[in-house]
Image 1 (spheres, rainbow, N blue to C red):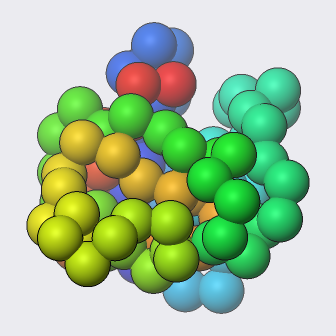
Image 2: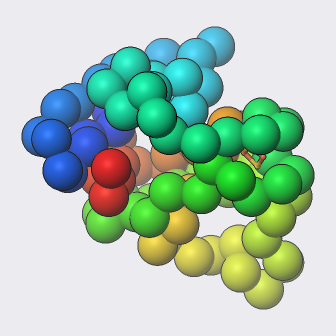
Length: 87
Ligand code: FES
C-alpha cells in the first residue's frame, strides 16, 4: 500500500493492494484518460513530482526503467510510501 498525493488539488488517496493507481486517482480526477489499462498503450501516463514509481508497464524501455518522473497509472505502483503526482 502507498499514498498518492495529487499536487494540483492537494488530495491524498490510499492505494491498497488490489486497487490500481489509476482507479485511485480517478476518484479525484475522473477525466484522467486511459485506454488499454494493461500497461501497453501509454495513455495513462502521469508526471511524477516526488517519490519513486515501481514501473510495471511495458511502455518504458529497459534503459528508462529507473525514471522517477513518470508513471503509467493503470499497472504501475510505488516503491516509496508516497507518490506526488502532477494531477
Ligand atoms: Fe494503457 Fe495505462 S491505459 S498503459
